[in-house]
Image (cartoon, rainbow, N blue to C red):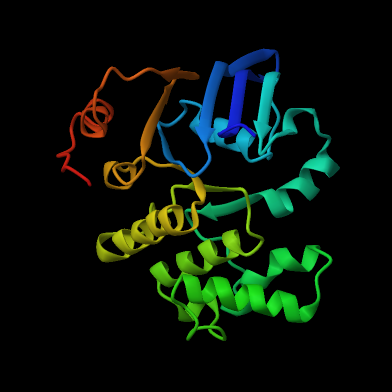
Length: 248
């Protein structure tokens, strides 16, 4: 079995805007190892969200291959991708994407309703992940009754409830600041260390990027090779205007 859980092989992505063709990704290749915590960084319009969407099975490359957990998802049709995403990928979003009229428990349970699973087994898994993110006392609270940090914890619990091979997080701390941001980063880091979860995080934030094992920078549709011996040097190259603090 390969140590790579994600292999992006020479992928391009081109969109049509009327008569104009826009090349968003230009022959991108990337590997992510099992249990890695990778930060994907780059300016707006660089192609990082497009690359994240290819890896998460939300979009398909124009050319090239995307292999996740030994499945070539670039060859799947939309119905196959939809079934695959249900169990293989956990999504964490910047603005949580919780359903306001549902409780924390019900929001986390939603992905399991698509699976052939007994009510007892669903309850066990929902309670397990809510306990994991420290919200076992907030089961019956709706999103409007939770803080931003608590809502993101519900979002992370929902991402974990199917025990996915890969967790993709799109700006997971972008709507948080101060201690709430640090708590979510602590949680993601603990998931990687304690459960050996593979995490791919898109972020503009050097504080969030510093928590990752590895930084991958994209610009104008191309991955950039950083000439850096340490993560701190890579952070300094990627965020030249930020004060970078060492991170163990």
